[in-house]
Length: 318
Ligand code: ADP
Image 1 (cartoon, rainbow, N blue to C red):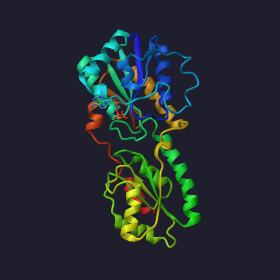
Image 2 (image 1 turned 90 degrees about the horizontal axis):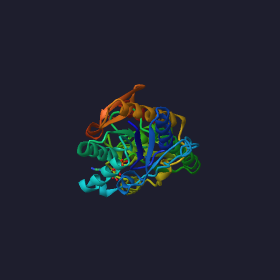
Image 3 (image 1 turned 90 degrees about the vertical axis):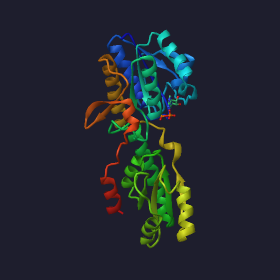
Image 4 (image 1 turned 180 degrees about the horizontal axis):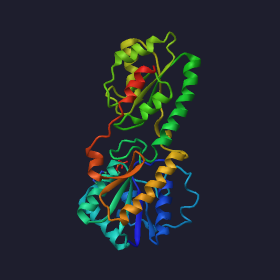
């Protein structure tokens, strides 16, 4: 291969820049020209494509976000959109692509490979850690540390004022962020989509505490609803007053942790290796310390299980 392209797509995640840097340096060390596609699939369709070098990727390892930008692109969901993208890829002499993103990005990569035979591998770039085939995704470690720091601050107020805080964290349909952060911050209860959340149980846990100063974590996608819904239901059904804190997008940004930088770098180098070894239509992940490949379709067809120890921890440590 003479030219390998990288793009970032879907939600941004801290560590994507370290990943881009690793791909670029890995290519340069093998005499391959590294190419950047800007704004995800939108840039692939629009031809927003340029050569990357050491200069473009200097001093980015510690920066959050992505220098290649990211975008959501409805056109790529159509065959015509993918046709235009494939033409641009061929016209630029790109022989292999690394797609860093989540399951939406992998759907697109899978179709691009199936329809146009363009070698493409995915790398897991999402704070949600919800992709089957890898123990951790790029951005997850930073996100949980950012969320934990924010909740530690909220705890100071909860303690001082004797308040109940219902804190909502991200995670889409997966409870990884909620569980890790909830255990790490000593939450009284952790509501996640993978387990049944019982309002009466939540209320009981809050009332165990004489002064009702406590923190409840609600993961996005919980069947009871959002943190705002849970807070309202606690008032309506149990006359429990609570404050709502939605951490939102602060969980996405910021300086990537060492773990995220190392994971992003390792997966970047491995992705180039895998393309050179002829692999395609698969995600490069890390499991039990080893680099793994998982067919792209399995990353969304199979559900990554939430380790059962979390449920035990969250009930024993309250
Ligand atoms: P993520 O990759 O983080 O899951 P999205 O779900 O927004 O983020 O997907 C990113 C992009 O991937 C979309 O904007 C779209 O361009 C492309 N994509 C998502 N789903 C599909 C699909 N079913 N077919 C083709 N492309 C898709």
